[in-house]
Image (cartoon, rainbow over all chains, first blue to last red; front, side, top):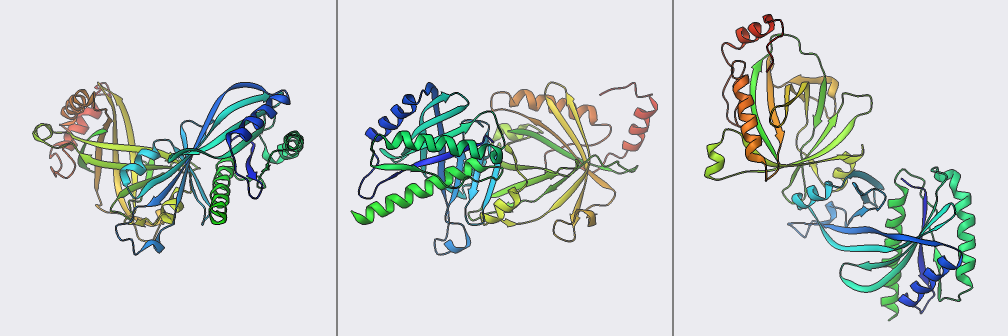
Length: 212
Length: 199
């Protein structure tokens, strides 16, 4: 799996994410000499147990995450957050799960946008939209240091790049900032980072709903 | 989708171990069954998730001697067993298959497996497995198919079964046909032919 950091946009209290911020972030990538070279898309699906007896939810996990990543078009990843299980399978596992009918998709998040090349770095700026609505739910940023495949070795370089990026974004005085979780060094760390971003998006939007 | 026939043979000689598959059908929260296969042949076991669906039905299906059913497979990482336990699936049974696999290209990509089926007296204890039917081995002939080409695959498998007729009876799974009484003689004849007779 590629060595990447995934950052997500964290709006300031009282503000929300919008397409203007997305445009500003994209312009930021170009302002630091990023060369746009294509589109990308990742999908995260939230599946829930399909229980015949709704009175027995305790036996089953509340949710199962399924993730498809552009780098691995023939693979699919399942995450159970409670027991911290990340399983890699062929993409045909999705058909198997549909046949089994034991877990059904409730909502999907689409991470999509443009990617930029900046020397030894690849940057992906993406909006987050859900299968239920066209509204913008978030903004993500993927940063990859191409020369090194070891996350441990690439971490320092990635950290320095992200510092430069954060300064560039700060200059635009946007109502928020990019945040990232300490990158997961496990074998399927990229899938885990997307799961974390999803959790943050849902958590922040629940907080926003309560405030409203 | 796949085409399948099965038969049985009586073991005459020790069968070298070439392949073991540790199959664990699971039953989940809604009645759904899935099989997890672990190939133990190599130093690093590899896992496959397999879903076998319903067989083709109707007058057309009854006419043919080969079972046509849906089948989907996916390779998975080694923690897939933990995943399915975590999803609430319950292990229904566990078997160890030990035997050979042969591959033929005869109008279709045909795989023949000759296996002894063994049950494990303790969970996952593959070293303590005992044969379910001592002295009897299961022969499975399978070939992948698509909705567009399954007729040709059925014909190829049927034709292949005819070649094997002197050695064993092959039929749809679930239909028992017994062993061929003259199988030993037929096998001896084949082997004494200097190996020149090929199927």
